[in-house]
Image (cartoon, rainbow, N blue to C red; front, top):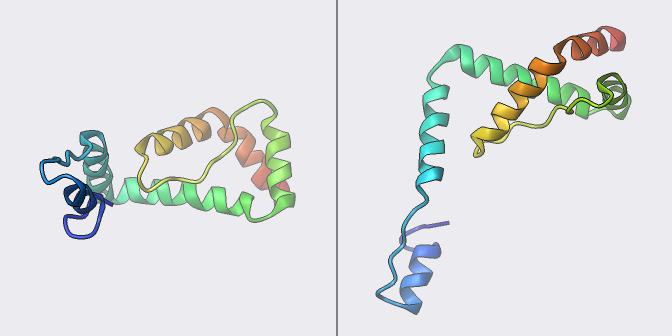
Length: 110
């Protein structure tokens, strides 16, 4: 998006040669956190498991409804985001708060 030759940065320079493009430091920091976590096999495996859990339930309306019913008012599982680290934090919080309901639903679906 901010590509020097064909992205937003280049388009801004076409309009105004004095315009300076300043990348978002929050986005850069997020990428550092993502890349650091990718270096740890345990973290990678954990987030892979969370994504597989989400996929298992969300790819079947039957399983998804059973999960929603068992969670009642608790927050529902969400897909992990590659760019928003906060989405991963939300997923961890969700599974932490409702792990027994998720396990019970897994038992019921088998």
